[in-house]
Image (cartoon, rainbow, N blue to C red; front, side, top):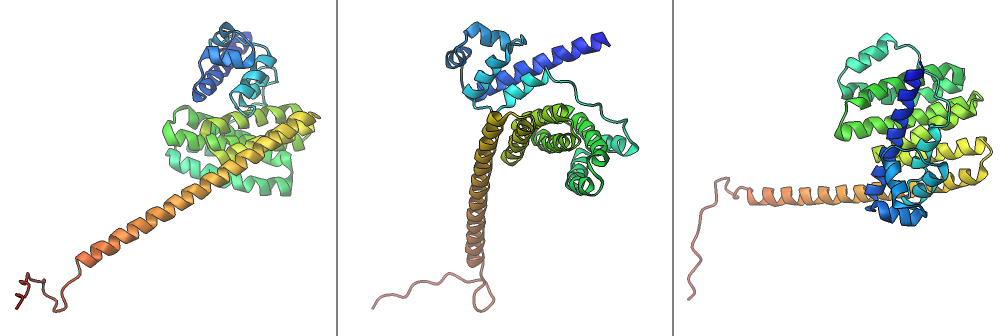
Length: 279
């Protein structure tokens, strides 16, 4: 058991180092530039990216400098938080989902996520939570072997399930576990690149902070969620406009081709006729 605990701690430290390195690379900063923005030395940044766990304040400054919206700090705090309750034993349905084609499993889990809110309303959080945790375990298995857009879609759905787990734990009076799941939802939403899910996760993180009495961070996350929602709306508007333009271009091209292929009035192919001579 002790060995498993040490292995888990090492894995979490590596995950924290990876998240920090990815956000720095995304912002196009060198280790020295990040150090200058945070007030730490370059060696501090290098050691952190090599797996050495630094103070929470170090990651808070890095999070702000890299505009990570709390994702880096959430991973750092997860090292101090208790592990979430283990998922219940796999049901036959979960095993079948793990063996099914990923697209079919993803569609099934999306449908179930939308139904869980109704289950909570009717039966309470204790009834819905086991299913949420089971589906999170299934998603973790699918994410481990996925790549490209499929992985992004699975991470986005994982973030939504984690947000739901956070809300259910909060409703059940388990604030610590609720905060942990809110942090994981934020991390997965960032990694997925889905702005709408990111806004959802930021809002959930803000509510978890409010429930814990941290009004300052609750406000910060609420504002970040509002910015993410605005960004997502703008992105959807741009995509809609681009799709409309592409559709008009396609229809215009089709009309031109039909005009070129139109038959002659007699129904026979038009023949070349010499122009009339002048005079």
